[in-house]
Image (cartoon, rainbow, N blue to C red; front, side):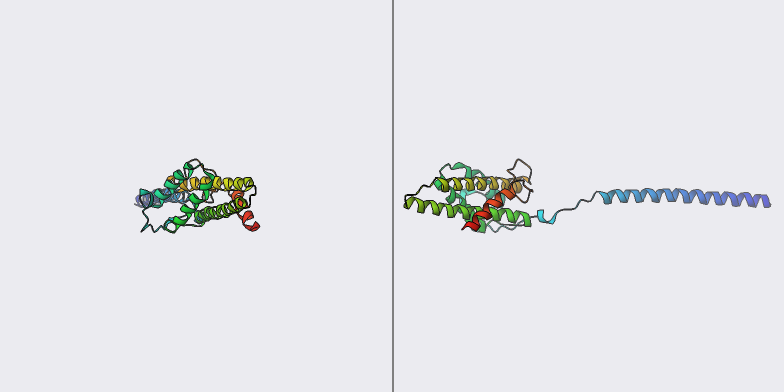
Length: 199
């Protein structure tokens, strides 16, 4: 009888050990799955997050839908239609005046819209300088050259903003935006803020 008790006790202990081993392996696999899930979480740079905070009520220009997307796409296309240097400032001014309707919230994208606004202000100054130079019979070639350079930056920055807003940042750009970590942002801001200090 003692032999039967020893055998039954041995079988019982073996059964318990096998059950514990299988349970331990199952828990180990679950832990590995959880670790894999955690590794796939990516950090988002808060300065790149932006929101459309436009208030287009009352805006009905150009027969377009009053949305940020339609507005920026319209201007990105329309701004390139002029080759008359005397229209450069007027077109830029029209766009920036409409910014009261169309706005964004987000650190980097707001910087880009501010740069667009500063370009327009610089173009307004150059437009004024050209009118004074003409009245005084002075050579306007240098001022027209600076105005053309500013307008080129303005159209390129507007293009990049259109890519950000309408194509989620995917597409060919000129590299002028903070939002897309553009390679020419420093070059643009050097022009903008060096010229502003000259005034």
